[in-house]
Image (cartoon, rainbow, N blue to C red; front, side):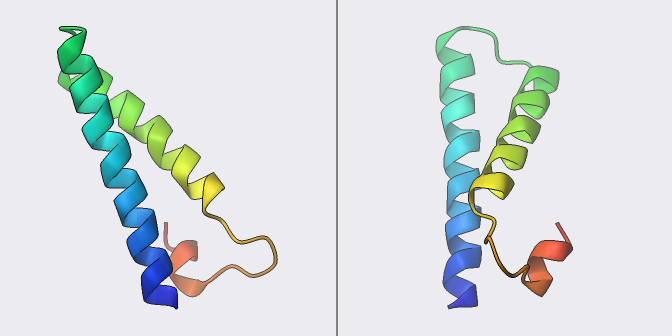
Length: 63
């Protein structure tokens, strides 16, 4: 069960990063700094959306 949630977290983050790369490429604005900032925002969003309400797993504390 925990492994499935970790995979879901990683898949969501990778999907976010790939969509950011595609969007920035389509807008012809692909720069490393911009990609880093938008990916960091995506990381924070994915962490908040996948956080459990009642218990914090040990792997999540290390994020």
